[in-house]
Length: 322
Image (cartoon, rainbow, N blue to C red; front, side):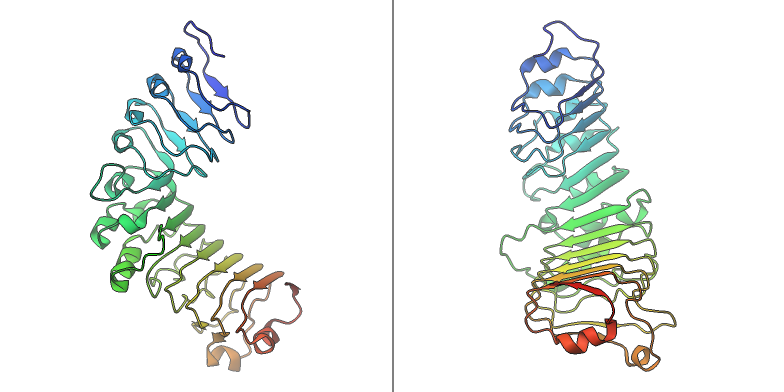
């Protein structure tokens, strides 16, 4: 497929092609700067790719058969952008943490602290990222704070993910402290929290200082019994709450002078088996404050205990899809 002799090729895109493996002759592309293997069925990357010392961008988006990266990835000394969303990696090679020019790593996959692999302090060197997974491997809040998310002004989208595998946290307070330490910069626009194991969320979630937040997804946070008040996030347009099994009531939303959820356009709530109501402050109800004034789409599914008539009475006039 590739030239036997050294090539001057700078850009190579095999995006969405039928290729299933890269030949060792890829190493002949010594001047390659950009390599896109996204949406392919490649299940292994040989060490030969690690000889592309000028490579700056490597895209592996949705390579769903790829389970590991070459251990010698650290040899790609000029790599700046590594896209691995949709790649089922169990860990990231420890050498990646030594890449001085790597500014973007889409998914930081944390390893068990007793093994090699990527650690939280290495995330501090990344100017940008989109997801931190494997958070169950974090020892405590001090280790979590090593990522220094609060100073990463360039992070606009962030997902915090725990791989629970059915395990229950030893200490809910420790989980809450860890989530506190993962507070991002207020420039954040999109937030996702998956499989969080604490019984309550941190105070920064829903804080009005996160005024740039446009979307929030809370997924399978099964130990949480209370969700954060989100009504004062003035630009929040899209809210998804899925599989938070222990939540009985959502709210109480803090009272303020303007409408609650003033920009929310889409609200989706699924698999909330114990959820009964969404309570608003008595002050808000007495003053007749608008609630969901711009809501266009409401999707509710598998919420068997919800008091439908009482809850919907406050938001009549919207389109409902069941």
